[in-house]
Amino acid sequence: LASRSVRQQVVPTVTTRLQLTSGSELSSRVLQIDPSTLLHIISSLEAALAAVKTGHARRILRNIK
Image (cartoon, rainbow, N blue to C red):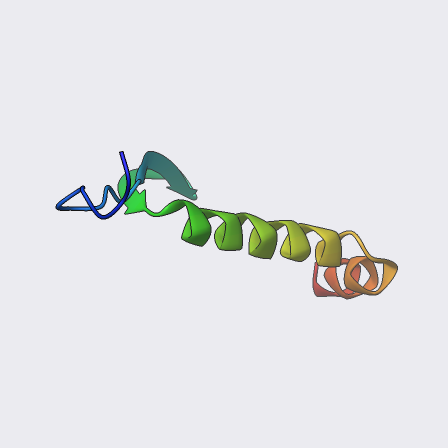
């Protein structure tokens, strides 16, 4: 069907549950987000992970401990 004949457009959402730990405390959160926001979150987390793996970040972490 053409999009003109559909009265309401379907908006896809992704529902996910995150289990978070803080020390010995465990909490759970449910997120409902659209796919484009999910892709943005994934790319931000991958960039943060890549930044932590650099030599500069390792030196800083070693000096903090």
